[in-house]
Amino acid sequence: MARSKPALARHMSKAVNRLEQLSGTVNLVLEVVDARAPGSTRCPVVSKVLAGCTFITVFTKTDIADSSATKKWRAHFLDAGRQSIVFPYGKKGGRAAFIAKLISAFEQESDGETNIIAAVIGLPNVGKSTVLNMLTGKKRVKVGATPGVTRGLQLVTVNEKMLLMDTPGVVSSGVAGKEESLMLALVGCLPDTFYDPEEAAERLMELCYERYSQKFAKFYDLKKPAKNPLEFYDALAARRGFLLKGGVYDIQRVFPVILKDFSTGRISGITLELPENK
Image (cartoon, rainbow, N blue to C red; front, side, top):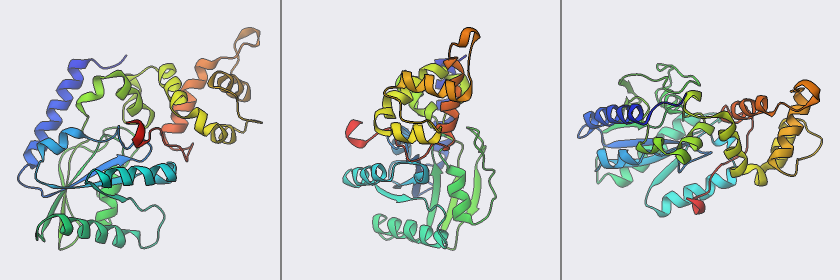
């Protein structure tokens, strides 16, 4: 059963209160977004609550997103006056370069300020703790695939120039909206109690199956891409042996499989939204 709208509103109110505690203290906000849905995983309320700070968008999960789409999104943010940095995956020496880019970007925007007090902000499960661990060089914050894994404020030191203040995941005020809820569910920002698996899987197919049918076929070892989502469900059910009495395909068992494989990044190279469609 999905959580109620009042429950979501209370959660949001609590998150805003925590952000307000940082107002006047931090001067750099690292807004972490999932590269598979950069528009939907932003936190618009942060810009209002922490107005006056330097903002840098950090793209995580670029290793499982469509690289061409990530380039479009970075250009889109730059056109809107927002600097962005790609989180380094599997790059030797990536930590030092990542920190240097953040400091350089801050100094360009901060009117001469040199001491950085930063906050890492993002929705649950977009990779906030992963970013923090990279910056500190130590696994001082628990990292996991469960939304909401980071709890409470934590102070961490990057170097002599930067101090980080980590906050709990921020749920945007739009989560109560059906469309945004489904998008966030697909990238793992919402627990499965918030959405219907069939509805979420169908939305996933609507958003990306036409562009990425080859990727789905290859991942599930299908002989060829299905012509449409309905045929894909049947093909996957047949491949996995999901059958009801009489040999009827049990596609209800397919939906959770697709959602888990996508949200956890097992199916990679897919981006759900493009800037021109937002």
